[in-house]
Length: 318
Ligand code: SF4
Image (cartoon, rainbow, N blue to C red; front, top):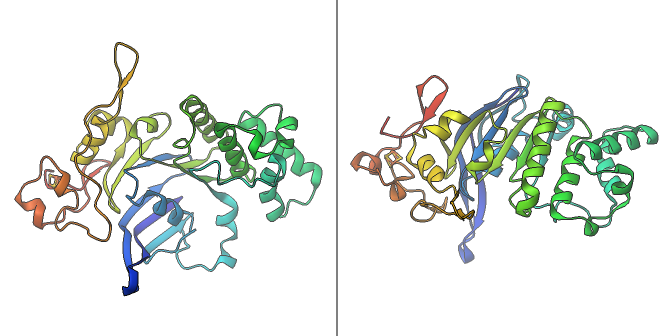
């Protein structure tokens, strides 16, 4: 359904008085998401996940590589020819406080995409809006439709953003860190809502997260990103039970575990900081932080290889 083929993206970064410089934030990423499939894209902040999400719905144009939607190459299509893609794909963002319009009621905000895409009958629009609010468990929908963002909790705001995303019944949804900025008590409910919607609306989802633990909720496959590249990809259970790449192993080792006194205990973390995309290390880009690095890692960049059926790893150990 959505295929990214060797895509690269860059941003322009200012360098004080020396002008600006183009920096690659996504470097040769290939990823496919099938109909009804949920793929998790995981990695630390700054690894390029959000950029991949935006590329996958052509909110951004790649510097190189190709993007396919339903088998059609949409890489260079002008905005005027992206109608089907715009109608059938949606993205929800991390910050539920910034993504809502404070001057629009919930009902107006959720209704807006229907107006943009030509649903002219007011009664029909109202019915669709109420159904979407019910589907994200904001009930009674008639009451919620009258409220304004300042009257809602973070979890409720994110569910309003999800309701707006589903009113056009998208076939593909990019959920960018949808629970990272809401309080812990609302997270499970938002994830549960997304999972139920995915099945009910038969949507494909790209679930972007820095937290591998939450992917278990509903992802079929996971792709782990590090500094603009996918370094490991495979089935969710396989990766969680037997991570191969040292970076994935580090992410899993740092998932907090409940201790007998009912507190969550932070475990080991990956050493060091994510390097800037302006200074990508030579050889394997993870080598300065990798506990298993050896001489070859410092000079040779490992390609992403299929080491067993459906399991891809970029590491000289395999
Ligand atoms: Fe670590 Fe070397 Fe594998 Fe890179 S290639 S992840 S540095 S062992």
